[in-house]
Image 1 (cartoon, rainbow, N blue to C red):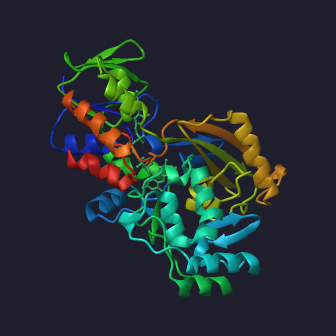
Image 2 (tube, rainbow, N blue to C red):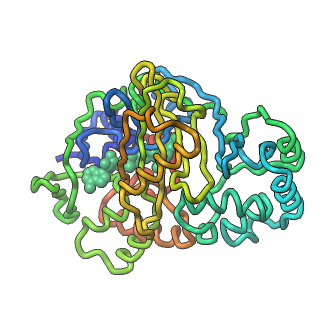
Image 3 (cartoon, helix red, strand yellow):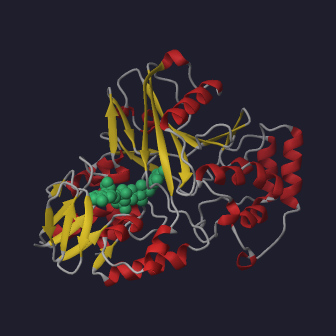
Amino acid sequence: MGTVILGSGITGISAGYHLKNKSKDVVIYEKNDDWGGLCGNFTINGFRFDKFVHFSFATDEYIVNLFKKSADMYEHIPFPSNYYKGIWLRHPAQNNLAPLSSNEKTEIICDFVARPIKKLEEIKDYEEWLRVQYGNYFAENFPLKYTRKYWGVEAKELETKWVGKRMYTPELKQVLKGAFETQDECFYYAKVMKYPKKGGFRSILNNCREGLDIRFNKEVVHIDTTNKIIEFKDGTTAEYTRLISSLPLPEIVKMLDNVPEDVKKAAENLMHTSGYMVSLGFNKPDIAKHLWFYIYDEDILASRVYSPNLKSPDNVPEGCSSLQAEIFFSNKAKIPAADKVLENTINKLIEMGIFKEEDLIVKDIRFEKYANVIFDKDIYKNRALVLKYIQEQGIESIGRFGKWEYMWTHQAFDEGRKL
Ligand SMILES: Cc1cc2nc3c(=O)[nH]c(=O)nc-3n(C[C@H](O)[C@H](O)[C@H](O)COP(=O)(O)OP(=O)(O)OC[C@H]3O[C@@H](n4cnc5c(N)ncnc54)[C@H](O)[C@@H]3O)c2cc1C
C-alpha cells in the first residue's frame, strides 16, 4: 500500500518523480505497454513518429533545466505555413496575404477595416470573437473553416477564454505590408520551440522517468474508493493509501460506483476532440519543406501536417524524410473509418504536390480518443461538478484530461510538481 498514480504521461511521470524525490513509495499504472502518453512515440522501419506535433516552449527555469538535463535540444524558430486553395501563405495568414489574388486581398482588407469594435466582455462566442478580430471575409475563409476542422465544431459553439495569446491579432499596417511583400518577422506566440536531438519528444523526460516503478498493460476499469482498491482489466487488483489520477474525467466517472445522475450527465457532456495520426515515411530526404503547416480547404480532412525529420533528423533513417498529418473530430461527430481517412490524406497530399506515390515507403494510421479539450459554453459548469465529485471520493485528479484544461506539456509537468 502506498501512493498510486494512474497514467504514465508527462503528468504521471512528473508526479512520480517529485514524490520519489520526497522519498515516497510510488507505483504508476499505465494501460499501454510504454510510457509517455501523448508525449510518447512509435517507430516503423526506422521512422519515429511522435503522437501529434510536439515541441517544448517551457520558460520556467526549473522545468527548462530538468528537460535540458534529459536531452540535448534543437531550437527551432517557428515559421509555419498555410495552405489555402492551392496557395501557400506564411503564418499567420492575415499578416501574409501577398500571394492571394487582388480580389481576395481587397475583400479581406476592406472587411478588416470595417470590422465591428467590441469589448471582450460584449463578445458572446468564438465566432463573434473571430469576426471582431479579423473582419468577416478573413474569419469566414480562414479561422471559421479551421475551427470546423481542428475543433470539430462550429465556432459559435465555443466560448473564448481559452484563446488567450494563441491567436495573433495584427494591426492594419502589418496587414497592408504583408499584402505587398513576404514578412520575415516571427509572429508566433512562442518564439523558440525546442525538440530533443535524439529519441523523440518524450526524451525531455528521460531523467525524471529513470527509476520510476511503472507497471505496464494495467488498464484501470474500476475504483472502489471506500476500500481503496483499484481493479484492472486483467483481473488483478491493487490497494492504495493515496490516489493520484491523470486519466480523463469522463473515464474516471465510469469507474466509480453510485455516481449521482447529475455528475454522470455532466461527465458525458464534457466535449473533446479525438484525432487520427497519418504517419508517412519517404525514400527521399527533401519531401518536407515546412516544420509544420495548416490546411484550410475542407475537402482535405487533415488540418495540420508536420515533419518529424525537420524536428530532428534522428527521427528518420539516413537519406529519408517523413510527415505526419493530424485529423480531428469532436466526440459528438460520426468518426470516419481509418482506411477512408488514410486514403483521403494520402491522395490529397499527392494532389497538393507534396510527394509522389513512388516516394512513399511507410504509411500508418492511429487513433487517439482524447486529443484536445473542447471549450464549449457549458464546460466550466460541467467540469466543476465532475471535479468536485471526484475530489470528494478522495481522488487527486491532475493533468490535461484530469483537470480538463488546455494544457501544454510544461503546464502538465507543473501539475506533478505542485503535488
Ligand atoms: C495535437 C496535439 C498537439 C500538441 N502539441 C503540443 C506541443 O507542441 N507542445 C506542448 O507542450 N504540448 C502539446 N500538446 C499537449 C500535450 O500533449 C499534453 O499537455 C500532455 O501530453 C498531457 O499529458 P498528461 O500526462 O496530462 O496526459 P496523457 O499524455 O494523455 O497521459 C495519460 C496517460 O494515462 C493512460 N491511461 C488512460 N486511461 C487509462 C486507464 N484506464 N488505465 C491506465 N492508464 C490509462 C494513457 O495511456 C496515458 O499514458 C499537444 C496535444 C495535442 C493533442
